[in-house]
Structures are given as structure tokens and as C-alpha cells.
Picture 1 (tube, one colour):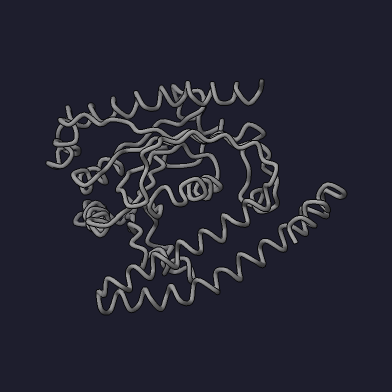
Picture 2 (cartoon, rainbow, N blue to C red):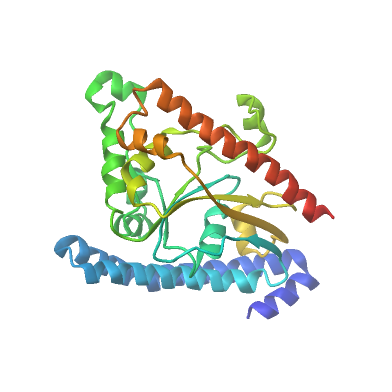
Length: 311
């Protein structure tokens, strides 16, 4: 089917893209129902009984779900100029925190695509409100995605005890990943990059927004002793930042991904584990300096990756 759709895209791009999107959307919806129902059933059993076999079943179903999506990507983008640089010593049974620049909703699908059979299931901090999205929200919960409930300044002003509750909730959520393989994705910019956002915050980086350290510091404090490594991922879209539908319409022609390990000074990790990030000025500054160094190198790397595609 996807070969015929690719031929149709060549003959009539607009019609081909519409047909491809329709076929893919139908397939994704079907997959969501096909894998979502058993995942929710296994997840409910896991929650009610604490059975580790149910936990394993939930993960296996999720992996098959991702495999199917990756199969679609392979057929939607058969001629993509894909350039990927990965470290050799990755393990699907490892425990990693993954930092990444953020430009598009496609970023998460890219990470799942390149991480298949190389990394554990990718999880990320998710808003508590996502729980109310049918199938997806419950899947996040049963897969132990760290769920965070944010409180507004107005809510905190009315009830000051809420000030640190989101931090405690995030710490508890991270600890749910303890003693199991995980890849915890952190978009430390906090939002998708645009030139307008960069200019508004007067970012010192050409291709990046300023990194935020709070969520990462919290994850390192909760999980740092168990980590097999911190991964820095850089994603570039040389032919333009895609919308999410562009992925499923087969519109991405060039994609570059670089992944590498980064070292965290032991003294800084010890201070984070000791809970010093919020109260100790030196620890907070050391964390920001460490992130700034990574971001400076990433900024240069993006420039070089784009230049390589332009040759």
C-alpha cells in the first residue's frame, strides 16, 4: 500500500499527501485500539496486584506499539537522507537520562525510532492533565511516566503548602522508575524552539533556547545513583522544522541525529542527591554552568550538522 502511496505522491503531491495522511491516521488509530485495550487491561492488573509479570506485559505491548509506528515511518520515508551518530555501548536494559533540543512534536517519535532495540522505553515528564486523554493518558500512567501536577501562582498564594508539592510529586514519580530499565527524556529548554522565542529571551545560543535546570536536577537527585549514563541528543531538520503531520505525510526529506554520553562531575551529583539544588547557591550555579557548557557544544554541533547536509 505504501509503495502505491509513494508513487501517488510523486505523480500528484497534494493528493498523495492527503491519501498518505488518511491511510496512516487510520492505521495509527487502529494500532491505538489494537494495542491500547490489552495495555490498559495489563496496566489495571499491574496496579491492582503489583504483579511484575503484568508490568513486563505492559512494557512488551508498548514496545510492539512503537515497533508498528516505526514500521510506518520506514515506509513513509523510504528515501530520507538520514544521518545518525550513536555511541556503541548503549543497552536496552540500561538506565539513562536523555537531554535533547526541542523543535517539533516529531522529536519524540525520532528518539523512539532511533532508540528501538538500543535503549529502554523512552519516558518523559508528563502533565497530570494528560491522564484524562483516553488510552494515551492511561498508557502513560501504567508505563510509569513521571506525572507532574503544576500549580499556578494564584493557587500557591491561596495555599502556600502547595509550593513544594509538585516537587515532591515529581520525586515520587521518578522513584517509580527505580530498579528497572528506563530512558528518561528531558527537553531542558522547556518549550519548542522558534526564532521568536529565542529573540524574546535573548538566548546566547544561535540554535537553542536557554536550558532550564530544575526538572533535570530533580531527576538526577532521584535517579542519579542508578544511572548508566547521561545522553545528549541533538536533532536537526535541514529542510525545515516539520509539523507532526509532516511525519505521517512523508514530507521529511532530511534528518540528522547525534547522540553521545556526557559526564556529570561526581561532586555535583552528590550535592544534587543531597537535595542542595534549591537552597545552595554554589550547587545551583554549578548545575547551570554544566548545562551551559553542554549547550554551547550542542550549538556548535547543530551548525556543523547543518553545514554537512548543505555540502
